[in-house]
Length: 585
Image (cartoon, rainbow, N blue to C red; front, side, top):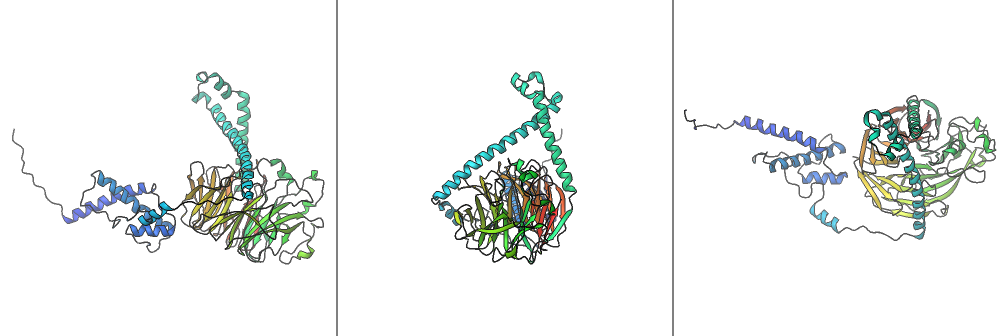
């Protein structure tokens, strides 16, 4: 056998071949980096993003980029670097291969924080102040209330899930389960025909009710439109009944409250009779058509109203006590609480001129009277919300704080401030209470969502993910989901149990002004979510798969607010920059 030829010559690649090989390696690197980018955490605040890009040797902005594109570019830079380092450690990258980005090693941790900032952060301590006796008592009250509400909510959730599991098992019993292999107690519980029949009926009723709601929403149309003010309407809210009081829904008036740039508040009919026949009084409610004006106070604030909220119904209606209470937040640095009382001298048949109301000779059905003046914020107010108990009010402001007020002890002379909470680096805008009354979520212009525990006063968690300002936050009636939206046009659904996002909805093409879930009553069961936007539309989304159910188009310009009417009709109300209030059902 001939000896092998050992004189093997190796020819060097041409320069063009080396460039092509290098380009091919970079393409493979980009493919791996794109897969890795989804797991890379990047800063949210614009200043931190700019600092991080500078440390990576990247331009802070390329022509045509918005804030979201800048964050995506930073994410790809960091992903390429991680992939390249891993391949270099594994010997998959030759030493002469140069990574085009970053041009230099980051000086800090690559997230816009240098060593000095890290050192400063290490010595930063969280400070606490002593709570006043009033705040301690309020926290005890909220704790007792939240425990009772959460116990009721979790029990209902257990029944529903138990029914779903048993119903599914009963349908697939022959294929998935072996009755003889189960223990006696488990078999008796699982295959109890009476229990299966009752619980499967409950689940079927919920599914049928959901299908009915969705079909009704898909067929929604504009039922009424009303000019609400001489200036644009900026906020709208509807009356609500806490869960567990479904029996009172039919006996409570369904009313709508609006606030506008003129600084006034108006009360409108929600489209149904206000009192049932067993109330013992005849108020000619049947004469009131949808969106009829029921009450008005033209001058509540000296400047524009930015947020409005209505106290939930907690007691039955009497002629001596206020029907409900409306809270409003304005850019005049204050918030106000107004009571809505039945006007015994009202004449429901009179037609009213919305633009020229005579408050001294007001014959509308309800009187709106100022109850308390909440002063203390150092900058304009943005949003306001009632605690589910109806005894506390939260306000947000451009002074980077939110405050909690006591409703019962506040007055026109002085608002009783229970809590002044800082912790946001930017202007605070959105606020929303958990249905159990245990948490409150606040949002700011830096894209940060903070969840605070009202029972302890501590921050429970925070969420980062929005590319721009976060304008609104709303808790789902199921208690474990939080919806937020803002300037980036997306709705993000956060899972409070896992503390991570569970869904991201590209909802609108412009700023989202307000979010509202369906009510927790048995007729709605939180089955849909509504949103309004500057793109001129309101939209309704399914909470089961977050798909679009319908788009409400009718306003000539920006839609400033949206809310849901309680009850089986699932009516939706919107207000807009075109000064109109619209009812969809």
